[in-house]
Length: 324
Ligand code: GYE
Image 1 (cartoon, rainbow, N blue to C red):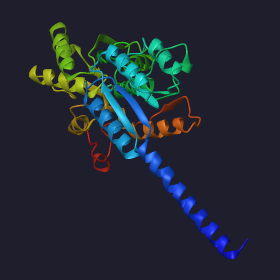
Image 2 (cartoon, rainbow, N blue to C red):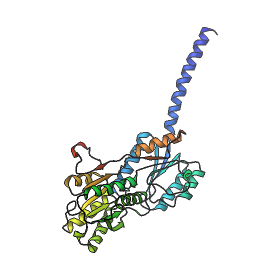
Image 3 (cartoon, helix red, strand yellow):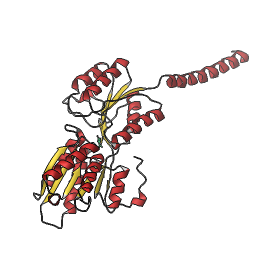
Image 4 (tube, protein in one colour):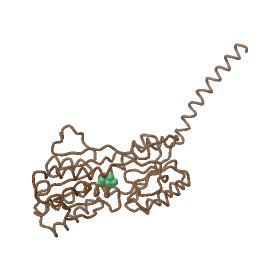
């Protein structure tokens, strides 16, 4: 080939190579992954932080998110998932309010070829091909941690220990795990007795209402422990205890789940005695999973989020502000 023609061909190849390269990245910026996300509600401090984490992480990952809040109604979640299917999103992610009732709509997503990531809470189904993967906390472990704390806390006495339990939303994975894990441990010790247990939907106002009801039925001196499935319900119960002249954390031992900043402050002040972390910051992991799934990578079916506990021995100066 004539050297001049060779040089021109070479230049053309270089231009085409870089041209194509830029073209590809422009194209991916122009058509980001579209994620349809159905959040179950806005019932707690934990949930607000979880929503922030999801939305911010999508933004940072360059993922276009269609975020729908179902305000505690599973029918709204089903509607949202159907709208994501109609829109032909690349991935659907959702936090199911309760465990049951999802097979039909998830079957529709599967038929449309849209992968589904289940976040935070789980579904109860006999067909695990209805979702690609699930990411959440080990709620059973959280419940067992609460039970193990009580066993240690009351090891020096032989007396009966009367427990009041504020449960989460009925048929939701965290409420089931925190209920069952706790009982798995305390059932070994007959002196631990749950004298009252009611679902408070993880809401502060319900924590207040239920604690009020408890104090109408029982004298404060009959209650040794309050085990609350989340911080917001704990805060409501603390208000009522204080109004009734009860010293929370002193007259009644309090165990709370979530580890929001206010609950850590209460622990530090001795108003709460044991705090079990439940981590709401799942956004970056959800986005990572969405990207890998869209690329066709294999991802693990079940992923758990690491969590810790806080007690009176915690070095509070060493822990960063929780940010929520
Ligand atoms: O503990 C509670 C929230 O599903 C883990 O839901 C979540 C729970 C969390 O309302 O505060």
